[in-house]
Amino acid sequence: MTDPVVADTRRLNSKPQDLTDAYGPPSNFLEIDVYDPQIVGVGRNRYTTYEVRMRTNLPIFKLKDSCVRRRYSDFEWLKNELERDSKIVVPPLPGKALKRQLPFRGDEGLFEEAFIEERRVGLEQFINRIAGHPLAQNERCLHMFLQEETIDRNYIPGKVRKNRYTCACSMYIYFYITLIQS
Amino acid sequence: MNFFGFGQTAEIDIVLNDAETRKKAEHNGEDGRKEKYFRFYDGETVSGKVNVTLKYPGKRLEHNGIKVEFVGQIELYYDRGNHHEFVSLVKDLARPGELTQSQTFDFEFTHVEKPYESYTGQNVKLRYFLKVTISRKLSDITKELDIVVHTLSTYPDLNSSIKMEVGIEDCLHIEFEYNKSKYHLKDVIVGKIYFLLVRIKIRHMEIDIIRRETTGTGPSVYNENDTIAKYEIMDGAPVRGESIPIRLFLASYELTPTMKDVNKKFSVRYFLNLVLIDEEDRRYFKQQEIILWRKGDIVKKSMSHQAIMAAQRFEGSSNPEKSHSQSAEDGKS
Image 1 (tube, rainbow over the protein chains, first blue to last red):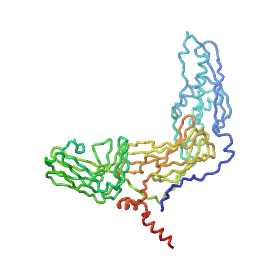
Image 2 (spheres, each protein chain N blue to C red):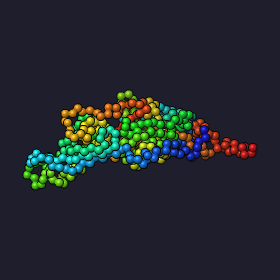
Image 3 (spheres, helix red, strand yellow):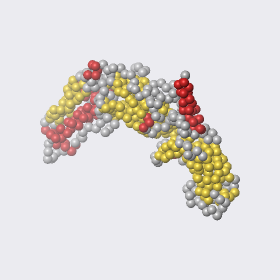
Image 4 (cartoon, one colour):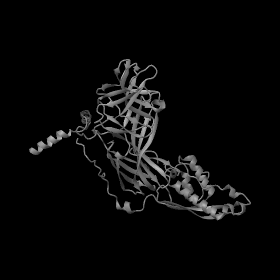
């Protein structure tokens, strides 16, 4: 009943950390590179494709190392699928650059080196932000985009893990996630 | 228009009998400015003198009665016209007549019940004040003196820790623990966060203290959330098996005790918000309510007898004089 003059601020007891956990590779490894732009096709039907290489140790992705070729409209497709099916706020893509598709430009238009590089950087930022989002990782469209050679636009949309947000064990109470646009 | 009697034919001044010894406490005004007011506890007597000074000593002041009131009221900002008085005591100081010279009146409100703590918030205000009114035909002359009331509590009998496992399946699992569920206003939150699974890239982790003020009832309930504090507890990316300690001193923040359903008009509750932020600025958070209570001050000899009685009721500890004699006796044997 006597009131302690100074509160007890000693740390709570905690389990010592396993050394393999402490010094082993982290379980959150996920890196996606968008590189090697190549111009495909001839004349007015040309377009640029980029190599999208993903390296990860997250169990939710079937392949730990995958490499596919994607063009800008594929990224647009992914953004639309996610906006429709998932509850997340999808980050913006680099611009569509419609003006660059008009004729009689002084420069190379869509195939201008500086523009391709700017777009490549934007696409890389976009895909890394998306792929790291726990809710986006649920969506089949993301897995198809990253790890299947071609995108089947007639696919059946759906979730990869149907139980991610349901409670298997009553002890678990779930976090809320919000995506803050910076 | 009555600006505390200024510009009127008389000036009113309210002076408490224990003004020399009574402690003052800081309290925020509606505009955010802090001011000091006399501090009272539940059950304490409020007594003093009312000085009425005639501005023109020769001129008489005709009036319809002079009275002093002790009022405790709740004011909702969206409904300013309606004051909900939960304490209202009146003492008549003078019957209708006239004052020929400046006069002093004594008053005493004995053992006044003050059931709630003074509170000035975002949408509601609870205040206690003395009000003197000189009633007159055309316009009354009034003067108010605000006081601050603190409600004290004892150390709770049951004060279990809060311990919970939270997460997103296969993505982030943590176990958080706070040493208590009820903290007094000068307490320390001691806790820890234990990482069971980390598959996201965390940049840092913080604890926020949030105050939720709830006003209104039924369909028109309004919650106002205020982040009182943000305290970073971890910078960098943790891995599985790491324990992050928490040590958060509450005294440095502007907190009030938890108030539930005060006079069925409003509530003030506090929450700890554990927030993890990842590399892409996504925030993962878990809110947990804590109960805050006010502990009585350490009993000092200089305190008025009444305040000592009030504090002892809640401290459970003996006064210093008693313990001195106790230890002297122990020394002898």
